[in-house]
Image (cartoon, rainbow, N blue to C red; front, side):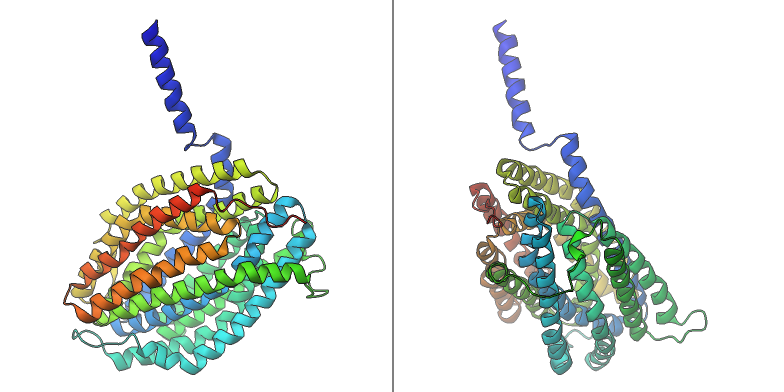
Length: 476
């Protein structure tokens, strides 16, 4: 009898322990309701980017490198816009959880003003300094590629892509607000339509099918810009014609006035986030520039690697964003324990899933590079870089989820220190010193720099477990 009781107690203890990390069917249903549309949109988008990358890659290494470098610069712009929106998006989710439509509307107005400011400043910077910025990545030290040709292709691509920054920025402001209210379906539909437009136009304009001129990288840029206008039109038109669902848009443009206390809080919370995304994206760009000192073959291999890894990373990106939406709404409704439980179980789910996805990515590490029309040296490097990324994926999933958790409660200064400062204090100096002052193989340098994410993942878990992020920031 005693043994039976002891076994039952052990089973019960194990069940309680597992229930701490594994949610109910309704929990996963709610997570999937938010995350799946984001996964679908980003997966299709990144898959089309992969096809786009392969199509450009078929025209040669120089065009592929030119597009890759420009996209690295535009990546900084995208994250700067996303960072500018992040401060207001914290309030959007909590206002929506509180049931305050006016508060959501005010945050939307703030987002529109912010993206316009970022758009104007970034546009001028890219126009004036575009050539110099592209040239920073062009080091012809390995006998592969031509720096002058790569620069010419990059400038052609950039001159057209600048036009697409306008619809991209506006669409991000709308999508960010819709997701904050739990509507991830519309951005998904718009994104899916957009990427298919991009894919078709890429096929037609890059290679000159159906009587169109073969425009190469310029054709890829025209296709991308057209797709971004399509996405923006779908989101904007739907939002304004479905006011019963998108209640925040009612009267949104009657005035751009934002309550001074809210604007002040958005700036206080949002400035560290905007700086964080700017510094983080600049940090990643600086890492690429350090790696590029080892030759244009490294630039090409990194381009292939980032395109492939982005396709596999959509799961933990979506789950991280789901944390910010669901936990943010729970904090706004003052359901603190539910928010903690949601974060813990979603983090566990994200890391577990990414162990499996990382294994799949590793098994395909030599398959993807072989698709590209480039030198064997580039393919070999890309295969090794992909293996590194696959091994680091569970740590990245943990780190990303912790970032969104800390941000959800408005602890933006901690977010800034956790994300950007660790990058610039640890990863950037390491990459700079290893690439400039050692003869280490580029794959070993890449691996050592990526291992910084292990430290960030551990630190993130400590911060989340402390509960420092748990606060309601919309109470009046």
